[in-house]
Image 1 (cartoon, rainbow, N blue to C red):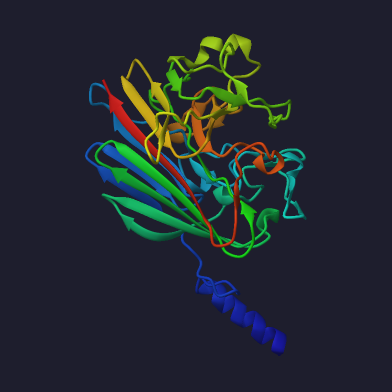
Image 2: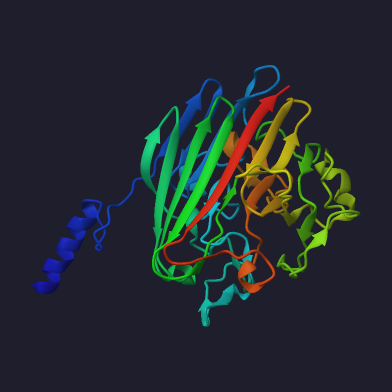
Length: 356
């Protein structure tokens, strides 16, 4: 009788959208931010950017973000289309690290390594909606529990997407460590194509990266620990040039962390990149407060079915993921990503879209 009663109570809790721990079950929804011709759609599943619609030089509107047709298709997605990745973005060697004398074994999902927070990182969870105004902003929150994917300590995470004027999108990511020191490195993994998400590859897009150095990687895309000047290498985008202009010197496009130039930035943000697409006349500028940016040319898309029945191929999108340096927990010479109890991690990005 006792077991039957307990089971029935649990069923009632589930039916009412409440877990046995007492937390309310969050519904997955789509949230639109709109000012004039500038429209951004998001979902609280993975805090994902679903679409960004902006005009070209002739006023024609296009969605310039790669993605899926339905929210359900983002579940168990291996491309990380548009998502917030964490607790620690990018790779951690051996899915392990030592902090304050304690060894932590994480959950690997990239061979023996961890990628973007593990098999169920922040891109695979439902975030709560804290506040939402269609002409202004949406704020998502998530509580990451002690031991989640192997990481230490409870962590309260907040992501706010906000429209600034009629052509800027701001993204603010915050994380407060509650009871244990923990690494935190959140990143926005949006795939951009300024010609429109179904317009083909991005190899002719022109890119400027305000980055004098990069962090080389080994065959597993793990940093070697070196910081190398871009001068004289195919990684030099300090002057605007076509993304594909040096592809012949690379094994398979770009997937590398750059060291952002912090000289000449304002008090809070540094200019990270400028992307231009000649046919549409669109330009995207990016600012951030983080020391690194991962430049990725979607080298592993293969034949991925996306929005509107379009199939995306390799190099059909580009990612500019501002971040801390990859695998910083295992490289003391890299900027630290450790957040101590009571401290708050803050990551700010601002995109500006124009067309001429």
